[in-house]
Each structure stands twice: as structure tokens, then as C-alpha cells.
Image 1 (tube, one colour):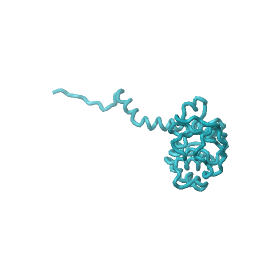
Image 2 (cartoon, rainbow, N blue to C red; image 1 turned 180 degrees about the vertical axis):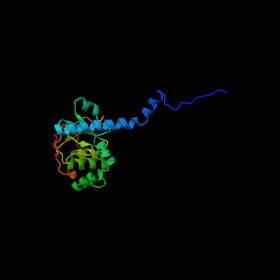
Image 3 (cartoon, rainbow, N blue to C red; image 1 turned 30 degrees about the horizontal axis):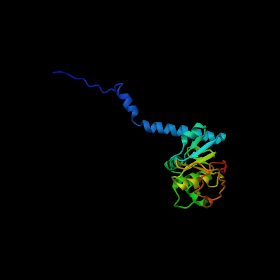
Image 4 (cartoon, one colour; image 1 turned 30 degrees about the vertical axis):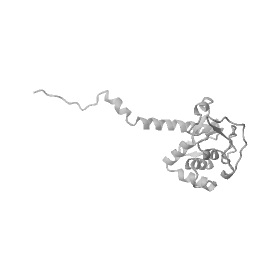
Length: 188
């Protein structure tokens, strides 16, 4: 009879497989922490920041100009994950946004109305806002009370000359703006 001995210790080849399990979550958490640390530092120092939206954002071009990138949809999702978005949604509705307006935009606007205090750190004032033609709510949301002109980006549209904005309420915002200038004047 042949005896076999079974070893219950892990072999070195099994270790890399174990390290892969949960890696996406660990790496994602690390990347979010790094990104929000950069945004918080930019808010403190006043470094220029670009507000871009996930769809068609031209992020790579803006990053080449050393702009900090702020993604309002991601900020809103992070607020929801941390269960604080309802307060921001209510602030935006108290400001004048309808209950049927996109929650991404409303939560982000509410955060700005509350001094850009995000649960992951402060969010810097925008130096430029770039929106796509995908959702007109984003254009109105990015301009609300900001004094900024939203620059709309599309493969079929070239930016027009700057259009002055300075709307004090969401009702005064036009979703047809195609300006390419922005003066960062979000309320502190």
C-alpha cells in the first residue's frame, strides 16, 4: 500500500490568486482616496479645476493642461454611497430645483450651496465647466448661481464664442449655451 501525505499549507503559487480576490475594490478605494485628496488640496490652494461630465468629457485634454478634474456624477454617487445625498438634494430643491430634475445634478448643486463640502473632502471651485450635448440638465446645473458659462463639447459642434452667464436661479439658465469661457465665481 502506498501512503500519500496531504499538505494543508499554501504553496507560493496559490498566493497570487488570493491577492486577486478583492483587488478591484482595494484598488478602487485607493484611487478614490488619492483623487479626493488631490481635490481637497486644490480646494485649499485654489488650483484650477475643470468640471467635466463622464460622458464625452475631454478629460485627457484638460488633464494635459494640469487641471484638476471634478466629475459631478461621481461626486453625487459617492454622496449616495455615504448616505448624505438627501440633505444636498433638499438644499437644491429649496434653492429652486424641481423634484423631477436629475438627482446627480441636484445633489452636486446642493453640495456647492453648502460650501462644496463633500464627505470625501472639499471640492474646488470650477475654473471651467465642460458639458456634452447628452443632457441639458448638466448644462443648467453647472451654471446655477456660478457666474460660469458652460462649454458644451460634441464631435458635431465646435465651441462658439463665450456667452456671458450669471444666472441667480435655475429658472434663469438656458440649456442652449455653447460658450467656451468660464469665470470661477462659485459662492464660497
